[in-house]
Image (cartoon, rainbow, N blue to C red; front, side, top):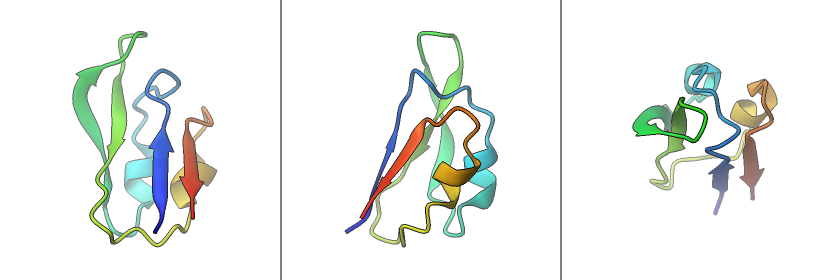
Length: 67
């Protein structure tokens, strides 16, 4: 089973990860981190394939993908 971890304090909410996720499992949440940004959230519904496109495109290295 694949797991994605998003570091809420590193995320600036740029939404790049939401654009590349082929299953649309990442979205911008409604909570604010310590820097004042709405950060990305991952919906773990079992459809994640672990492609790691989200982690590759993240400019802040805020996403880790575990298989």
